[in-house]
Length: 188
Image 1 (cartoon, rainbow, N blue to C red):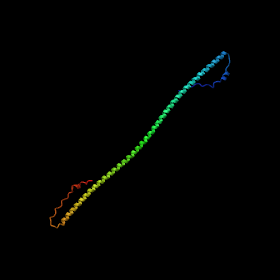
Image 2: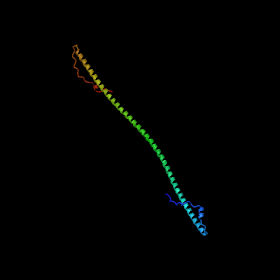
Image 3: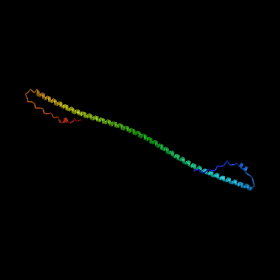
């Protein structure tokens, strides 16, 4: 709250010489009355100046009090700002570390996904190759078996064809049955 304005003097206070020059000497009663009036004016002015000084002192105290409160508030806010800046810096550091870890995890995930894809492709290729080898073994076994049958028939035919010993004719060949193991694939 601002104090009420105090009336300013209309000019500099008159000097004692100026007062003495204006002082009109008269009889002692008049002089006494004049002196009393001057004394009363001076006392009133003294009281007024003391009041002004007191109000200025109170104002100064209020301003000093507000200034101290403002300085304390600024200090408190400055400390809080310093603390918050430190927390922000720590949070940024944690964010950078977490971002780096996340990027690394994504890269590891991509590498692992690629390895899994390659492993699946390799497994499929191995399975296909295994199946092809088994089919080739079965086919080779059938071919070998047919070759053996053909040779056996050829040998029987030749032995019957060139049989000059007068023996009986051999019994006709029975249709050939495949052995039980031929139909099942070979073990790995």
